[in-house]
Length: 443
Image (cartoon, rainbow, N blue to C red; front, top):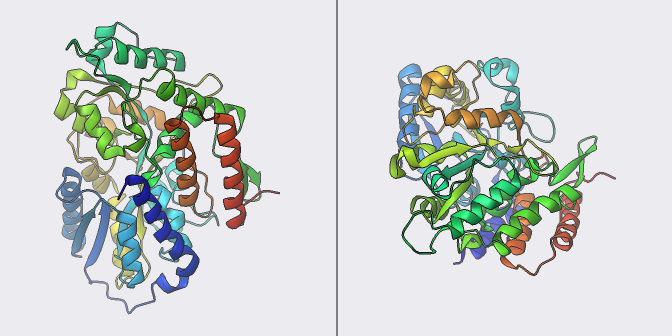
């Protein structure tokens, strides 16, 4: 199955569940047992460094509380498999997953509400991170676990070879991308490198995910507040169109994006960067330690995303929440686990120092000293960027918005004859339809 079809199938599965199965997949109440084992799912590849960190975190919780935890690390089609568990009324007790999944899960009745007044570490967690745990009804259905912003991971050795400064504007960034494409930065005498590596597939909405940092760095947006919890499309605003046009030009005019990017997800794009197929990767900090280990620390530098010509600063803000799932036999154990992983001890275990396998990228607990845990100063670029990070709009369910915008933006990058303004106007109409469907369209 192609990635595009796979993405459509996943969305289709979720859509069917949302339309027809909300009550059918909603877990039922069970008798409580405060010593019952907990099953925790985390979206990480099995046997990966990150999965091993998750196991250490679970072991530390068991040592602290006496409650056993079974860790299930899954990566591919994570949400589909979770949907299948819901259909069988066998959801795990805990899920650690993207903040953007909150609406999808909350709208299906899968999540327990979090009472911040009764949550032991609530006051230690950053207000910005708590926003990612808040649903459109203003209530909290998760606790923040990990945060991240985005920055440019750049081949430092290549930049030295082409003799250009660190980019401080989008013009600078485009010039650096062109130089990496045309200037033989790897010195092999072949024109076999690109400026940018980009995960621009429609799968899991990656084309939208990647573009969002540029939208916000230019003062654009997908949606704009319309008052009283309502929203209106903003993706066809002048600033948004300018941002998408700039990125489209890297694909279609400068041709400085790695071949096949419109079909690539992050797994493929990570490998493309490691293999030296491109030299600029706009991405979160979760791959920093991996790249340093696999490519050499002298080859890697981290640079803030430059402000766009019409706005900034701003990058995508996201991360992972710890979700307490409905239907658990051990609700008190769920809360103890969530409180432990957001404590100083839990956050430090999840950060995993400077080694690969961090499942806490930036700590959400404000009493954790990042510099005391990690010695690599490049992490601080991401920490500084988080101050201007923007979370996706808290509509009832963000998932269909991400997929719809990914489909449209992927088409713009793949079809160079497309009018960006026309495509964004058409996309705005689709976003209006979705807002209306979710009863969130401003009048």
